[in-house]
Amino acid sequence: MGKTSNVITMLNILSSGRKYSVRELAGILETNTRMVRIYKDDLEKAGIFVDAIRGPYGGYVLNQKVKLPNREFDEEEISLLKKVLAATSEATEKEKLSNLFDKINSIYKESQHAKIELSDKDRTVFNKMNLAIKRHEKVWIKNIGRDGKEIKERIIHPYHMVFIKGWWIIAFCERIQAIRSFELVKVLDIKVLKEKF
Image (cartoon, rainbow, N blue to C red; front, side):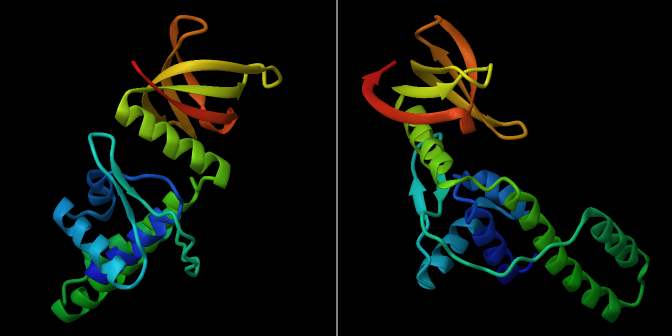
C-alpha cells in the first residue's frame, strides 16, 4: 500500500479505541515498525494525537474521536481484483491496477477491524486492564457471571488479553484460586489496585 493509504488505514483502525502494538499495526498494514512510527508522526503533524503506551504490553491508542467516511469492500471483490491483476500483462495497465488494488485492499482491511469497535465503557476496561498487565498490578472487577445473571466481585491478577469473537481477559482469580478467562463486555466496573502480583 502507498504511504497515504496506510496512514488513513492506520487512523481508521485506531478509531476503534483499542490498543494496537506497533508490530500488530505493521502486520496489518504490511509494512515495518519504523514506518508505523512515521505514520504516527504524520498523524500528529495533522493534529491527530496518538497515545503511546510503553513496555512489553504497550502500543498505540487513539483517545479522541475522528470521523472519517465509511469505506467497505468484501472478500469476493478483493479476490476478483487479485485475479484481474495477476492476468494483466501490459505494464502501464498493471501499474494502474496495482494502485487500485492497494486502495481497495486498505479499505477492506479497515472494515474488518472496524467490526470490533469497543464501546466507551469497554474501551475504559480494555485500557485499564492493559495498564495493569503492563505493571503487574492486581485488579478489582465487578462482572456478570457465566450464567449471565449473577454479578460477582473479585480480585484478579491479569496476565494477558486475547481476541476470540470478542476480548477476553486471562487472569488468576483470588476468589476461586484458579486461572480463568473473563469476557471483557461482562466487566461492569474495574479498579486497578496498587498491589503487585
